[in-house]
Length: 289
Length: 314
Image 1: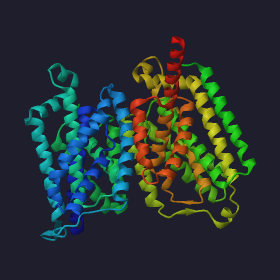
Image 2 (image 1 turned 135 degrees about the vertical axis):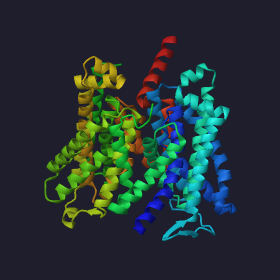
Image 3 (image 1 turned 30 degrees about the vertical axis):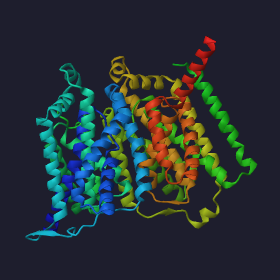
């Protein structure tokens, strides 16, 4: 029982990162109707950003967030201007198809770039406090992972505030609701798209940093994280960032349960199976609109 | 766009090209030349098979590798157990198509992006499961390796490429293909005018995955040793997608052009810039999607129109 509880706990801890990874994808998909399959590669880049800061400049990985997030915002803006901004001119169906294709090309290029810059090896960031553990009864909580969960929740809460209180955040939400109506009320829809994409990329960068601190990063983690984020988006639906975070926790726990029940190698499959089943039962996803 | 004569002309040209390649082994080329052409032929089959569902029926299937892998798995198992290779490949293709039809009934409830990501997840489920159940590398027994003849594989690949071109040419000019294109353009309108969308989509998927299963069987027959999960890898899907879009999706000749260009360019770039060739490739692909959504086929048509316009002006 203790073992199971420990597994569930670890599942919950990684689930927070699933939620954070999914939040960026959900924001971009919900607002722009663009499916960025290179989201996992953006997470991977964020991870290497933190790795570089730590390895070259000795920056603490948690402090690195302060640099990785603005850098990712900028990267997101550049990607929007250079690539995805062209896609949003098309109608919705073409948009999805073209964004898939561009995402694939981008994923291929970013993967190759990462192998070139950082080799194909797995990297992590060693810290002095990396092994610290908080003992609660028989359970051992790795402090770093707990910190990533708290930070993920904080970032998502911050995003939610941004979307509800900030003037442009409200514009983003109005655009997600109905871009034509938003346009009619005088909202600069293009600008809302740009902001949504930049914010989504920033979230990916933050997720990548936390993944690298608590686990590890390698050039090939992209597809895996894209899939996790997609699963969570389909589980949680669009619209609520807190809901997305909860969806991430659910996926983390479901994986832990399945790993305990069927053995470790099958943990990847459970999420995918849930995903396919949910999609089949609710063909347009669980999205409430 | 253009009439049936157009497709027939291209089919004849491509088949003639394949006929010339049939003479290649007579010239006793080096093995690496035969291997290179083999890769192109396999790529043509894979790209045309993907093109059927994506280009004609308009469904972006990102789980194509699952069917390529199923074909490879079944063919390899039967063939190494002593079945002659052609029946083994036929069984592999049948297994892939039947599996696809079962999946398709559920998957085609999904539309657009949801179909794409649903099939992507399916492919990953298959890859992970096969990797877990069959983690050992599959190697041919020594006796079979001793009897290995490359030219045999080469002719089989040639035959398959010809079959896939003929299949797509037939589809492009048939009622079935017409119905599929109607779905691609506007599914609701097609349904309203009496086109059974699900039945047509399933036909496209069955044909497409049957061909992919044959290609997988050829892969299993060609390689001496590989991990059983390798043919389930997502790169098989992405390769098919890249080649089809580079050439021109929904045309007969596009995937063939795309496959030739893709393999030649990939080998060339890989030799020249070992570690960044995929970077160049990704960038090139993005440029094609943004600038030439119709691929090479459209580029040629546009260039022709421009030249024609210039001539008329002069």
